[in-house]
Image (cartoon, rainbow, N blue to C red):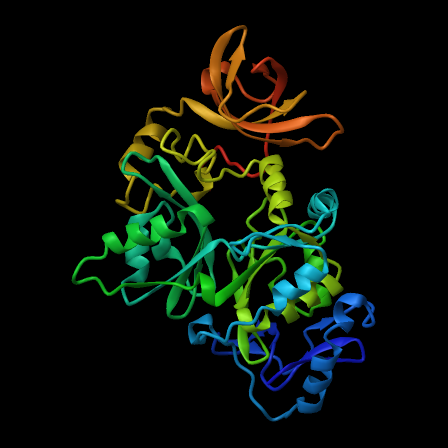
Length: 434
């Protein structure tokens, strides 16, 4: 089975890349159509794609479609460790990517363009340096239910959620994404917490628990597709069946014989999707996304976008100094699911209106070092946690915690001698989900 380019269209052989239909059978089971086309590129003669024409010619010779062949969803649970294939990073270097020793794509030299695309078009970010854990075993949902803030027991296969790992006093460790699959749960973690969360989860597996945890970070790639034109991009790739689904919903496709999982939610605010895939097909899928119109985004631009949108991150906004509610992650919390690590503290904070500080955006007249005190009329009201270049020329933008009693959006502050204005940020929530 292989991915091929035919008349400007990306095809896949046999059961490759089925497209889920919106209708259901009488028995209530989802069905799949038999189409193979998953995407139409723009100019098939573009520099990016033409460099792989020799490989694609071989694919075309091998490609055969059998109309009678059945097509079915392929779960990531079937993924076996693929051979290592560095074609993805060769392609990125050809695009001018700067890649560090850990394999993190720092920049494509287009940071301004990438942020602009993420806010007004569509960008694609290689998040493969983020951690990915695969939790299996009969007790996996019950186990994760007790380990973090989300209600895992209420989730069904093909659903997903954000969840926060906290300390016993509800201090924040990391904000993770979870995808519920047929025989496993996939957790997506921040790079800096990959090891610590893995160790913590294993620490709480007791002898009778039927739970196993595997780190699949090095066996997979993770792409983030973000921006208001994300839906249009998926339609070009014939992946439109997932458009309009709730956050965390994910469907499985197949490219070159290996699974590709497409999930709602990019890891940023607003419209977007994530793709989890084998390292053996990373180059093909990356090229498909760029040919469909996505602008490549490196880690430096992604960090700027994170701050502009107000997404809290470990080591900055998610530390032992702040709890999950102060961090604006109310939408990740369940008060009805019973006991879990940090639950008692969270319940008390909500019951007694005990959130003493909150995370806000701060428009700044100049750059300020994170950790600088935020003041109003000489009195400390908070701390700056992150800072980046602002949207307007000469301006900067920061994130910081401000005392609840001091105010919120519209508050004028001083941050290390630099004037600032407290503003809303799109990523955070300040109320429990309905």
